[in-house]
View 1 (spheres, helix red, strand yellow):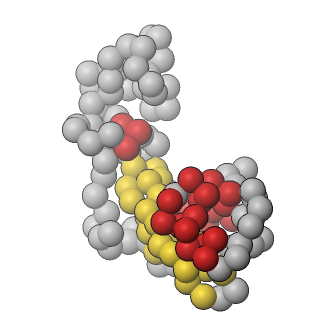
View 2 (cartoon, rainbow, N blue to C red):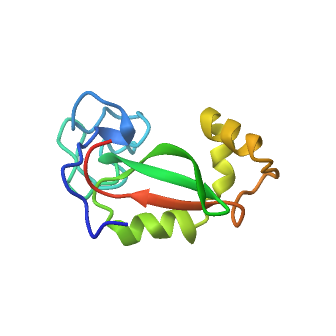
Length: 133
């Protein structure tokens, strides 16, 4: 993994393109108070730079027995550094079994005989930080 993030475009609230504004009350990610539930900025305002609603694409290589079998793009908070991304992929409660929902990844894994609901331990995930995707 690279030492940091360089030249990565930000995508608006919760990965939905269109602008950096906090959405109106009762929208996902907005509390009934009319503010972002993460950065507490009011609806109609801009999310703080460190808000998790600002995401960027991180390319993740999926490896089986040392061979890269697929690459997918995972949208993660733009303020996360390489260590935060590594933690998400390797140590958090996120399960690599979520990759079964990514059609081209699932096909590549099946082609190599990978089975089971949980892929933790069956695959290695290596994030490619920085640059464009």
